[in-house]
Amino acid sequence: MTDIMTPQQRHYCMSQIHSKDTTPEKRVRQWLWKHGYRYRLNVKGVPGKPDIVMRKYRTAIFVNGCFWHGHDVETRHGTSLQIANSKCCQIPKTNREFWVTKIQRNQERDQKNYEILSENGWQVIVLWECQLKPKKLEQTMLQVEIQLHDFYIKTFNHRSKTYIHIEEERLPMVAEEPEEYGQ
Ligand SMILES: [Zn+2]
Image (tube, rainbow, N blue to C red; front, side, top):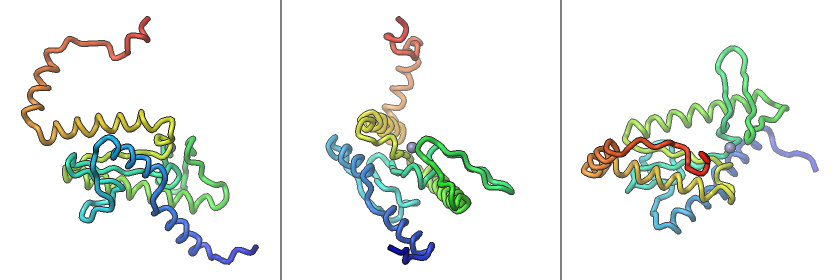
């Protein structure tokens, strides 16, 4: 079978696939819903089109594909394009420069969106595809839950904030390591 698409057309098709609901994103939504959290999708007027918007917590969640958004990949700017592969983002050897530029641009755009959101008082939570595999989902989402509540208290409940602040100061210092590791 011959390839009938031009590189541009192929690129367009891939970007369309990318913009559809991904399985990791569905897992996040299902987890949130099951645990009583309500959210909106594709909310207009929120910069960067976050995948999930939780207005009550003023939190925007991005579910990023490790390849497209260059998870753990450091792109360098300069005369030559350099990029280091990470475990979950392997840049193809062929057409390397195209992919590096593409991923670099995505990273820059992501960063800009996160900054705009933060400046507007939003909490930004970035979740990576590799953190949302069935085995890791629960652990990742429990962390998200903590972040949601922490931010909610800090942002909306000033009385609680003061209370927690005082309580924290009164608490004796404890080792960060869980006990079982110290034995
Ligand atoms: Zn990853």
